[in-house]
Image (tube, rainbow, N blue to C red):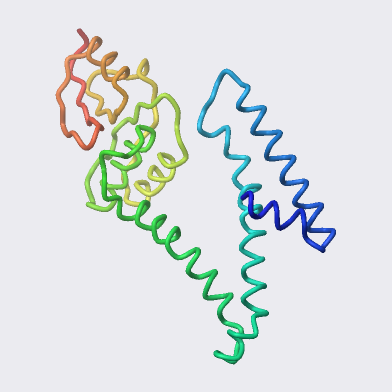
Length: 208
């Protein structure tokens, strides 16, 4: 990013200079504000990502234009493909890493607790398992849980998202959070049907 800012600020193009100044002021101002806050959560930085990407893009564009104009490469190759090859090499590794992380996670233990239930539901869909009639109990409903709820609906399996206080005897529950599990254990006698990487599928027997 700093190299992109330097190139942008000293560019002969006035539009690029103004855009770089705008990016620099937005990034630094917002970063100072969230740094001064007592509460610091990961997603507070999310609005910075597009601005940071623009800053890096200024540097990548400079390299692209330099290689495209280079007489050496044009003489050797005849056509200005080096700039495009540079962009391909820059993006292919992170793109491959994204695909591997989403579709082929290698370290299942590193899955964030927010993603434990979605990962289990993904496993059910891919293995053609059966969770029909189960209740998912989670403190909130991330979009990935709702996505797999729709996927299961297409397989004629229906799960619902419920709170712990709505549970009753003979329910089958999918849960991953320890505090919710403890609450259920205090209220019901229960059997563990399945355990999958931090997710329990529980059958609630009787009220205590």
